Image 1 (tube, rainbow, N blue to C red):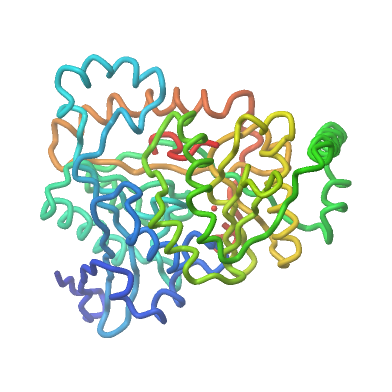
Image 2 (image 1 turned 120 degrees about the horizontal axis):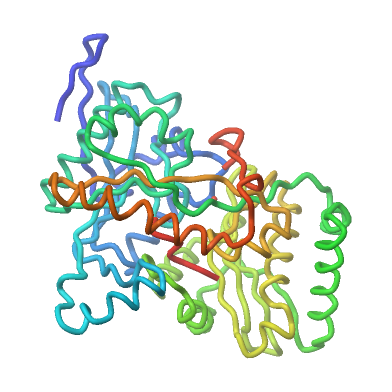
Length: 405
């Protein structure tokens, strides 16, 4: 696909089927440097694993030999709707699943990062020309692959703004998704971080730490090569996923093993043991000034009494502070404790369309109120004033969140 630019130089779009087909130098130049979810290792592990998508692709917009933009894609040929809606909607769909389960399987194309915040990778501001070329390429790809529904997933406003004209012309509409959670880190030590919390969160943090310490058999460790722990991690992760409302992606052994295969300071596991038994973990990733507590696993028989959820997050905050990070991101779930940690909420949106006019009109009518209701339920009592836009792309971790904690 070629499009002639305003300067006479033609933009062309390449479709690559693996991240390994993209030169590492291009990824390093274009990817957000402080968002570890955009590490090539994460995308490589996604391709190795069976976490949900049926395939992956990368749209690369080039002008001459230079890569102007890259957009990753995840292909779902039979996405189960009852796996990505809330419990109320799942109950309504249960009779359909019994009688005609095929009706609940939808071909869908997700654009961005299935496991993190959406971006179009670009070295500078995305021009209208390149944005238009990219949106056109997305729709062409969806038609070729016969994926009727197209979703740009979890984009902050700064990421969507340069695309809005092209998206609107192509029939996309925007719907707020669940906000991201980001904890700014300005303290020098963890004790200083706790001391700076407001009075009630500070008391609660100290109480949670005492309750963990009251279990003398528990210990917290940081593990770089965690391949030997993957079976135990999956057992704990399944306990979390059994309580999850949505399951767009579900991490598997191949994903975790591939991610752990190149151990180092950019991938570490906060692991809590009771004696020799793993009872909780938080998978932590690091890049530049940013960290992410990506996925969690808990033994619910012990989690409440020992405050495992809080304490693995405290351990991740310690790690991020020791690494000199300026922020740490957590998942789009469990907003009450994360706001108490001091996290701000970063607003995000979906941009959605369907290739055919009638289903597009139905989606436009039904999705906004359904997603708004799910968002309100997930956020709970937190007012909009708690939300904040990130200062820049460099400082940044649909249907509702696929991985509740």
